[in-house]
Length: 341
Image (cartoon, rainbow, N blue to C red; front, side, top):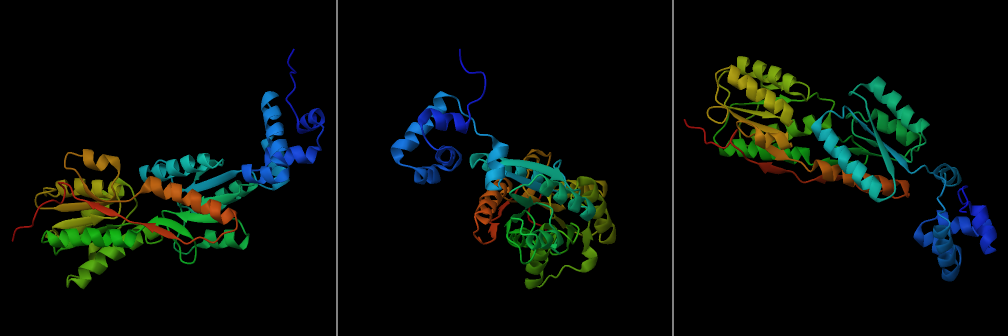
């Protein structure tokens, strides 16, 4: 009858006449390190016998020996946000490929909740943390660095910290160049909260390009709001009330842009006819709208994957550089018209 008890390192060592430490190094190390633990013949013999007796390493025991749990945490404002869930898909996929387990937790962009969730992650002895909710002040990242916890920022950046983002500033400039080329001069910006680099950099890139072309965007035509459609609609409504002659709106994310489109219709404007709207991220729904939304495409899935690869290098003791993935403007019906004088 087969042995009902799981095979152990001690049993394998005794059966093969080897020291248990040799067997442990072979079975619990990486392929390269295991090969250094003994001769290639012994390595093959141990691994073959372990497979025969269905040996399975104890993850907890291995973690205690190596001080690694092979777990990483991802903190995001809210996983219900399609952009953030797509980034997390990339994180989870890339983590699985290199033998890491990833878990995600929501912070709702609240500093107090963020601190609590960081403590939760550290209590689980994670090998590293991916911050998807960092603020420009970098307070939480500063604390992780002080405590020597490996971390990387994703989607949002903070000065002095390693981050994987879209080149949001360039994306804002792309949107501005597009609207200028279509004849728009009186434009409004549906901006996000200033503590998030995503909205701040996109707004700044857009405004800088307009100013360089001799058409500065006055502060009263910048309306701050959340990243959701309802907030975007409220911000666009304020802008259209303040300046009914607006011919274009740039929203720093797609959901805010969708809200802005609805507000435009309520003001009797025709999106794609006498009002242009451009968003950011190019979520899948953007192309499915009744008036498809022009948007700056960001590689959300790629950001997640790159964040894991970068965190793995940091855990290994390296100091990689930050990366800003290139954006691409996708023009659709919401802005694909030339303004007539």
